[in-house]
Length: 58
Image (cartoon, rainbow, N blue to C red; front, side, top):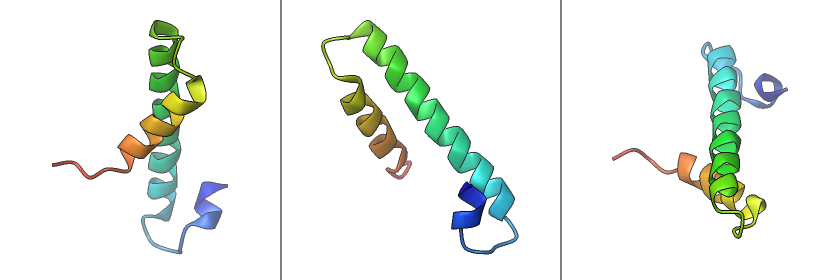
């Protein structure tokens, strides 16, 4: 599904798999954080995790 939404490029399949893996990792980490801090809404942690993955590495 992701690959079909990306612009055509030689690295399209690899990029799609990386995006899917990044999303799943962010959700998994947010879920683990929520289990440790259940007072914070899970949706907020997922949003924060996804936003963090969009930040550049410095």
